[in-house]
Length: 121
Image (cartoon, rainbow, N blue to C red; front, side, top):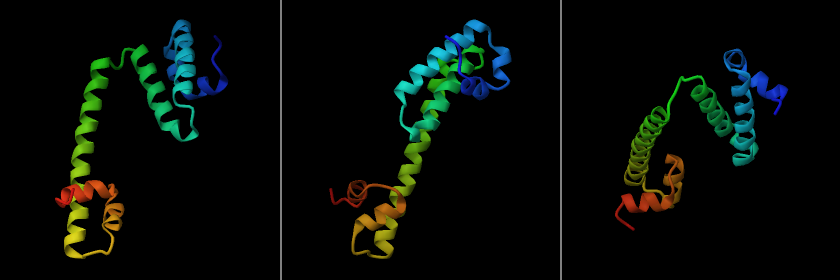
């Protein structure tokens, strides 16, 4: 499987560190990743997955590293969601809005999450 010019450009200097067999593997994984994330809006997901492939093949990361990063990201997301939820709660309490959906939207959360935080669901 010959890698595309786009893939080789994407690899940049990392291509020099990979063996021909590893480049074949990257090519195969890149195709599978493109099938898994076909939407143009999923380019960040494709880049992240392909970057993980390269780092793994170069011995720069492990599945355990990925698990740790995922766990940390989930914890950050939970904390950010709690903060955003409470911003919406405070918005409702400080400035009664006609539609709670507006407060939820401004804080980046869904209306049902706001209602639950307000004890209304």
